[in-house]
Amino acid sequence: MLDERKAVIFDLDGTLVDSMWMWKSIDIEFLGSRGLACPEDLQKEIEGMSFSETAFYFKERFKLKESLDEIKSVWTEMSIEKYRNEVPLKPGAGEFLAYIASKGIRAGIATSNGRQMVDAVIDSLKIGQYFQVVATACEVTAGKPAPDIYLKVAGELSVSPAHCLVFEDVPAGILAGKRAGMTVCAVDDEFSREMEEEKRRLADYFIYDYHQILNRNGAEA
Image (cartoon, rainbow, N blue to C red; front, side, top):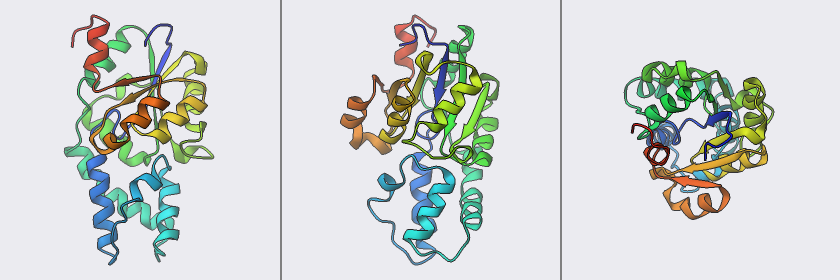
């Protein structure tokens, strides 16, 4: 998987950190406080959208009176303390980051999340030193499954897409990486487990946790 890879690019939520549980509860709480039920199809509908695209989707679908900035501000306030105190790395992720750094492989984050939350969780988990580039989908024209965010990160890392390995947890993200011309490894996550067959079909590799890669490469796990 790592042969001839010059860069590894990670999605954040559900891929690098265990946080998808938080976003489902925030959606339920946010809509419930406005007298609205959380539709069963919501998570699939917003999959891969940037933070701004998701706010627009919520405003249109649920006829919200708040501005897009107000919606995003509420979500940021609801999530940021959880990111600072309750969100851990996925199993083996910390060791894997140290391993690729020891091999001279560059690393980036390509996330659909908002910058404040990304910075909060990176600072909390003390993993900022491993990443040369951190970008959000709000910085590009279109969110996942468009390839824009992955092409942006690869460009800033000065690595061609063909030499990039992407880690993603949902089909829209996997498609974004593949459309960028990159090799993609799907990562198991509780909140996308019902999509495992689709994830395996779309991705080049599939792992349950990062220890699997470390063990295959004879690294200290």
